[in-house]
Length: 268
Image (cartoon, rainbow, N blue to C red; front, side, top):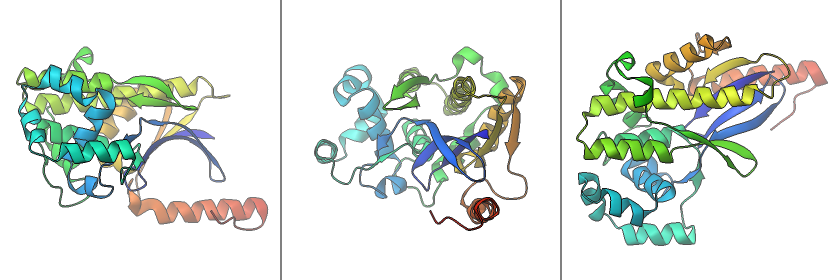
């Protein structure tokens, strides 16, 4: 078995899996955050920004510390009372640990693809296009994540990342720098989680990087390079896409492995 860092926006989950062709165990994730309005949050990235700020900082504390931001004035023109009621009553606000929604939230906070996304992944694509070379970002300048226990699973928690990002907004840091600091910090966080999970492995794990978020060339290369520097074997997509385009082949491979093992196919 090998550790798999599989993150797909479509499924609403960013998962760290211990898996082979026959079985899997979810061993870590990103911190779940509400999608206000359900699927509408995928079309209006700013909803994800608001949900993240409420979940990680609390709206009152956010306003106290960051009320001077243009982002705050943007939110004040939105129906926040309605959103607060939806969150409190858990109405059309499903939790999602999606890395795609995190990218949406960060992009919208910086001012990229804030109001409307015309297609899945648009905010992440436009945010990546801004990134200055990551070698220009010192390790300590990357936006930090921390690992916390959430229920039975360790999760990557973005509260320190948001404080660093909002501080950069107050300081009028160029968007290209902020985009680079986010990508580098996210790579650091993913690698830190893999390192923690690897401690429980009975043998040196093989790491498979897949899922829609690894359509990002910058993030894929940064995570893979760091893991290989730690002495780990890293697998990446080569002939099939990392996102939903590879699902059918993966399903066929799993079905074939199950058939070889049990003499039949288990439907899941």
